[in-house]
Length: 118
Length: 113
Image 1 (cartoon, rainbow over the protein chains, first blue to last red):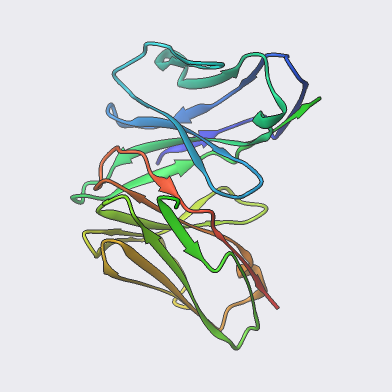
Image 2: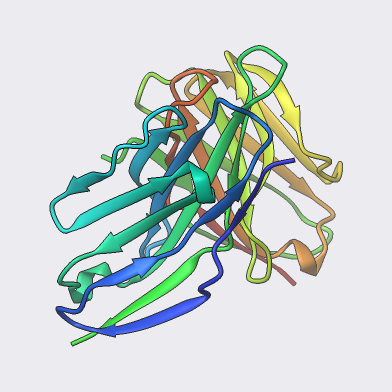
């Protein structure tokens, strides 16, 4: 069974600080995808990134960066120079393919609530 | 207009009521999902529809009944719910099954009294 662990329940940082959100996953599949989503107070989950299990290159998008390490089964997310608008709950998720055609399960971690204090 | 729209945004219902949640996606996706998000549990997948066919029922009680009349619309019919069913219900869609990212609606905040 697949599992996603986000050990940090809540994090508070002062604006302009860097912050890293941890994600550790478990899977028996060799082919899988990892995701990060942001959930602001409005409730909608906003897709941030998708990474497949064969691509371990780190990725940077503006102030966001992701570090994928298969050796430690981790997919960590760093926000550089945090801003108040970054305050939200962030979810890491893992997707494996089911044996049935066209169906897959997206398993989420419990989320990390990030508060950026002005 | 957002890609995935859910109505209503908030719903209060008694345990003997029958109500329905509606989800509509404007992204041309083939797969749609219902998730439950409660305070003490991670996001739980409830149902998956792919090309209007239900491909997953994640051991959900029968008081929740999904309906997918076409690839753009998804309903969740509710009847004789319990207070512990109070949660945020999120609808999502994706381009087929597999590993594509899912896009979520803003959810329906359900309170069962």
